[in-house]
Image (tube, rainbow, N blue to C red; front, side, top):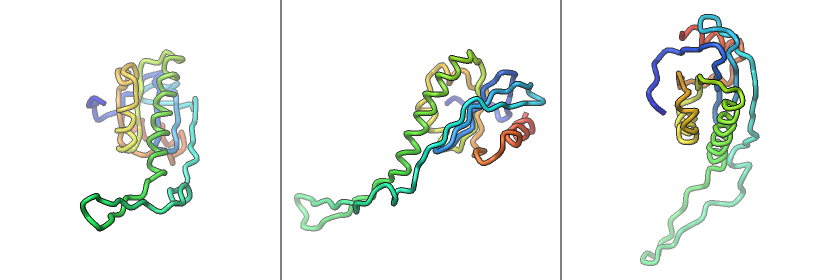
Length: 154
């Protein structure tokens, strides 16, 4: 994603995406930049148990054709894989949501890893609509707390 300004510009009818690897909120600003009034439009939550609950096999071992020794393989992190898959899913949903609303402005609020995943998954149309990005996990906050946080960054 291109570099954005450090402050949050939150115009009327801007879509605010707040998410991480297992939760996502699509919010619509029905207020203005100074007094945002965010309203939940869609919410996503992914059921993603820890890796040890998703897989029961031990990691494999590799045998080299030239060496008599075996080497251990790293365990597959199913939990991490599911986080990446969920991010790709909500990126597609965000694209559809923006076209339905005909929204022109998007603010993305997500932890750094999720921002990177989104950057690889968002369509060019959505990327062109982004007015601000904030590398912060706000998924544990209420909608009014998110509004206050974004208003303080205007």
